[in-house]
Length: 327
Image (tube, rainbow, N blue to C red; front, side):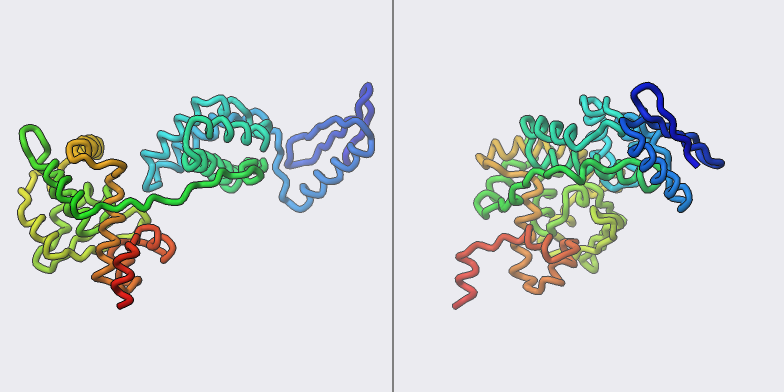
């Protein structure tokens, strides 16, 4: 049984039970102390009680640090998530303990982030925080509520629908021609992105040992969604690959992501192309491929999309093209 006693103007409830740390808490009234003690004792009886005392001093910074060491490395996007975690640890939010990390505190953090970054970035920050807290609740015995689930998430704008026109493609390939110190890999890389709708990371990770020109396939042992995929190669894609030299590293495109992004941005400037990202080539490739593969299941098998909803985000047919199909 809990002991209830008055200490000054407060009522103190003390619970001492074998197998549990002592729990002590003060209340304004005796009835509040009794209700709390009964609730804690009932949880102890059922075996579902975890003392909140060990969470009172645990800072969000320390929780994120453990999450970065034990959980993040197993993820496909570990590099990007680690960068986001380090940024969160430098923020004022990281100084809060889990006991003081209330929905109001998180809402204030959300509003401050929205003044500096896009809503999509703020949503990713909140999603990471929520995932880390939920993991701590499930796996590390941290007995706290998840305040991320109680605040309003910023609305995310619709996804991009930018595709490359044939004229822009011609200008871009010309701007990527290996003249002087320009990379000889960039023009073939862009052509392959348009022909296969492969992701940037998939193209840069492609190895010659996984390319079978004789049967026109490229095998991807690991993709963004965690599943392997075999990509069929068009006649043009075969021609691009056949014309590439074999690098000693065994990589089809021996170029770093940073160098590729810099070269792509500079080429867009030279070609006079605005508002184009490398990932837009995947949108373009998917849209063009849909004309050859009208079956959505076959198209998804090539592009690697897991759901029809995701596939729809990458398929952007023009109204003119659809009008011709109605003839």
